[in-house]
Image (cartoon, rainbow, N blue to C red; front, side):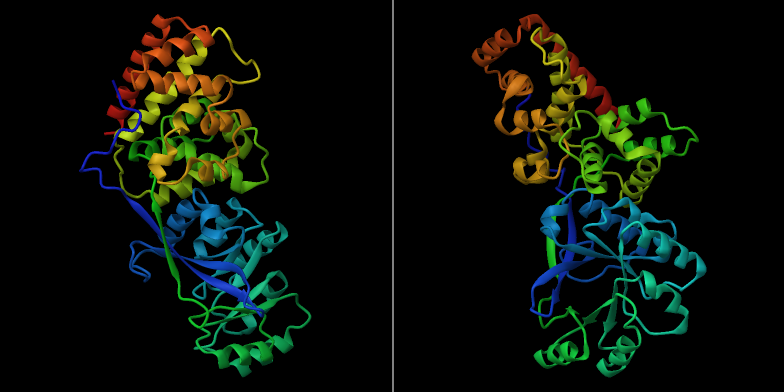
Length: 420
């Protein structure tokens, strides 16, 4: 019998994701946001990596999974390279928590101006990073919310003259590389209202368990989104068999807009996103998942339990007709997220736009879905007394429970074999 908390084998070394964040403060030294910086390990330095890859990895690891843990409700300042900006990648993410930083390496082209204007119109805050004043950037100023001056490159007096010349624009000015109390006071007197630097805090490394989609899942999804007409049933089938992709999809739906707790299955999430955002979501995850991460025993169990719960739901004579079949599958799949992410399940579910009945099942084991999940776990743990009680309450024949478990094992084995 499969244990409900299968340990990963010794060769399945946990993979961690690293993000550095440095606080951005106002004049009263109150933190209003963080600049998020990509890291590929615990060393607090930017690695030798392609900027597009770094941005995709940061977005995938942050906005698609640990959004609240990283920001705590504050703004996230994220650097975007030129190609990401002109392709409107930032518009996949929430306007209320993202500040789009235009890297100093970006050329002030007509193409870039068009994208900045469109993102501003959609409600995004635009920041110019490490800004050096020039006439080429003048056309951008009506659409910019924040301009960041690096005080190691631009003197406070030079920045002050520029700020005085742009009073007609609604722009906040941020002083970077503040290293002393005197510099902080001088920058405030010059008109800066936002501040960042070692005087306040050095970048802090955040580490969390990384949950990567399988290589096969990424390839299959890329093949599907490359088609002119999306096959939604095919997309749903691919996503539902990969825990990481499922988790990131629902987190992405939650980050894309204000969503009430109503999602009961992955089909609803896919349709809610729409074709444009779905293609972008898959592209971001694909770029961030450049290497294969083979599933371990917990992945297998999550898939197996999802199918087991789905089959038990089908067999139950007592059924809540307000729920769809996918709700039981989702309940089983997400019941192991705490083990996979090393976080309390309650914290994880705060970020998930799933139906309240699913959350109740996962956290309190309440309702029909809670009974089904309890039955599945009891059977896995060979708790036959509880199995008999729950089977009776759900009006499921004992033979159906056995058959459902055997079918779920076979189904999971086939899927895991495909992912090797």
